[in-house]
Image 1 (cartoon, rainbow over the protein chains, first blue to last red):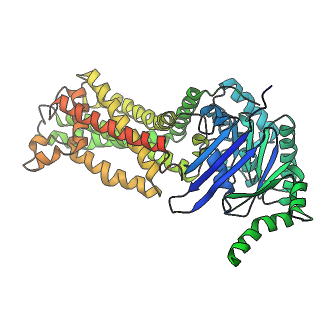
Image 2: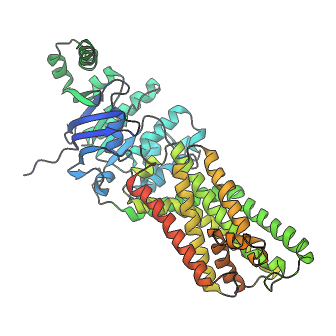
Image 3: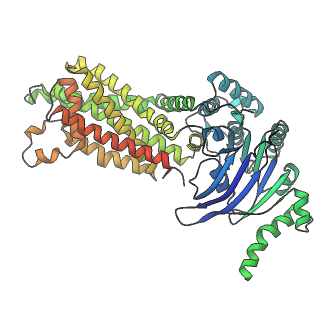
Length: 251
Length: 259
């Protein structure tokens, strides 16, 4: 029996922007299929650049990315990724229902399946009252719900959530995590970035810490605490992410 | 969890439908305004002033200007629609939903260009439907007219895509329309035959690519043209291929679309 390929396998990933900024510096990372994986790091560490590279939203400078054993640029790989970006980027001309329906179409769902999934997502994320309202007229919380509903609509095997609870009230955050946990229990791989360390500790089976475009540590939350001789994940974060920087300054 | 194969043709279809939906939702701006302004041109320049102008190239003035006015309206519609739609999608970043989707680059390019083609063709049909009873303009060469119109919408639709990708502000796309497309169309023989121009303006007019496009459309309607029909089509095809290749290059490489 063959082991299932990693949900995400990244080797030697480099990204240098046109202005010369080196955002990813030979990054290696493997996210096993079916895990709830956290990616933590300070602003500017390269988290969003990494996610954009996985989702074909930037031109990478070097390295390889595979999704479930397929090159990330292949149609089969893209079909299996769902992304909820950090900032709501919703089509201003479409209503909630249309945004979901058209997203399903872009991802190759039949019309009937897309309609069915759109209604399911409207129900799950409690968007029914606003189903025929265009995105610019939605509140911040409703936009966030729609963004997540859109990311999950085509039933991706790898769901990438880039700070999904930033600016979200406690109620929605709880609802969201209840649903994401259920998805995970059904076998969906989750890659989460967040600044809420307690959230990462409670949800993630494994965590990688990223700084200056490289993975600087990776283990289970308990494993990281042991590795860094730390009492909390916050201590781990501060040691792993900032101490190498301080060391370089001293050197 | 869906592990099914990618269906990029469905993606193309839905992206095309999305662009057409945008045109229909904004119909007063995308359809009504250009049709009304073109009809006003025909009424004011053709029917009012036309009686004071002798025939041009053997046609009554109001008949002579109709093909060029229709070409101008369609060109502007195809260009403006695509440049503004893509600029907005880039500006608000909802283009990411398309760029991340399982579609080939050419399907993204074509899907995003369809809105301009759809809008231009609707305007063209509306204007022909109104201009025939108003002026009696004939359609002498229907096949040539269809070919010229398809080239026109492909050329200006692709140009709109390119400008929509390069534009950094909303002003950039209106700048290209007001400073490049509109002047080239006006001096491209929409309102006059270049035969009446003194030298060197007649010769200079031959360097204007829009002049050949206007003449290809005019040949389709009137069966006559200021220059060889073969030359009009050859120049138009060459420019269309170049601009479509440019837009495809941007999608294939991700340049300007992706950081």
